[in-house]
Picture 1: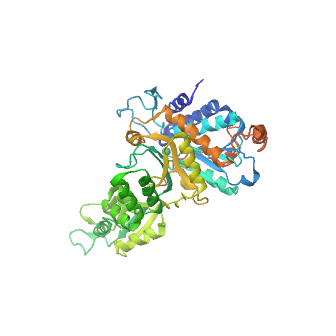
Picture 2: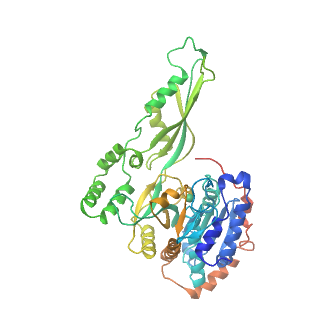
Amino acid sequence: METNASERLAALVRIPTVSAHIDTTGPAPFEKLIDALWVFYPVLHERLACERVTEAGLLYRWPGSDPELAREPVVLMAHFDVVPADEADPWTYPPFEGRIADGRVWGRGTLDDKGALVCICEAIESLLTSGFTPSRDIYLSFSGNEETYGDAARAIAATLRERGVTPHLVLDEGGAVVAAPLPWVKAPTAMVGVGEKGVMTVRLETTAAPGHASAPGKATAVARIGRAVARLTGPVFPARLPKTTATMLDTFAEHTTGAPGLMLKTLARFPALTAQIFGKLGGEAGATVRTTVAPTMIEGGTAANVLPSRASAVLNVRVAPGETTASVLARIARRIADRSVSVTMTEGTPASREAPTDCEQYRAIGRAVAAAYPGVKPAPYIMAAATDSRHFHTFTDWVYRFAPLAMDAAQLASVHGVDESVEISSLERGRVFYEHLVRGTTGGSGTTSRSGEEAGTTSRSGEGPGTTSRSGEGAGGSKMINPSKEA
Ligand SMILES: [Zn+2]
């Protein structure tokens, strides 16, 4: 039997839940991990109703004491699948060994996202043991196919929506506590993702009369596609500073002294100018202020001496908040300015809304950060990558993306890379964060052990038999863990 959070995390790391490999491994590693959670967190599993939503999704419900708040719960999210790790890469310790050394737990998933999952479970187990009863419902939403853009989180979000639930707060992975968020901002900061860019796959296609390559016409299909792609070189979309980014710069300015502090304050004050500057910088800075277009594939022709009747290209588009998939397609078509080239979306997720920072939910996150990491303040940002929480922003405004783990530059690079590892002290702080967040968003009155027993009874009997069974009620809609590639 494992004895503490780091050992429990190490044990979970040893179970290689690589969702990209499920076709070869089958669901066995995932079932093994779910079994381990039952062993590691007995009180949580006794007191919270757990249902399977699709094969890969776990949805736990901790009923709150206030029926008025039952439809406005807090949803804590994490995923228990991981990306592959190549044993041939120079890992200090093998990626699935789950080694504890140098004050850290090492291995694939320690930061992304088993670390946060363990912290959530530790916090809930501890709150339950202390007799705490939340005022509003708490849901835990764990998915086993986040890394393959799977359907578990989407199905969980749909389930809650169908039940008339509008979350008061959704917290998923995303940002972290980073030591120096910008080169001249040295204060450790809790980077909280308040929005994420959308992603679209756009197909360009054109046709032309086929014929012999010895007598070409004016523009062959290949030439037309080549010209269309060339017209998409350089910025296609206007630069616009998201409100969030201005707030972020302002937050950085507050704890940065001297010239850099003044510069940050100025950048925050003049968003239009800042958007132009970031846009000119290009690269990552440029990507924060506009929708980006990257041609990734091009195809056409069947033989060296035949005029192709058809040619196509594929664009990967990252959609900035404020833009819709329709407006993206329209602008790309205008820029190409060739009616013979069709512009269609083959798949896509719109950008999320920007969650507010001037609200009780964001302040509660800030207070929980301060409890776990004294002196550290939150700063909002827009994520470039997608998280499972994208399925929630269509029916609640308060979706935030932050895992309460400290990450230095090397650790940030180790996510999906080599030598992923989390400090043991981070795991403890992470538990403290989630405990404070739950207390701070669900009544804030602290321990109410008097009603604790009642809540436990309710949760055991409230949903009828089978709710704490792993095959749960949600199995009706279950499917195989399905690594669909939708984005
Ligand atoms: Zn992740």
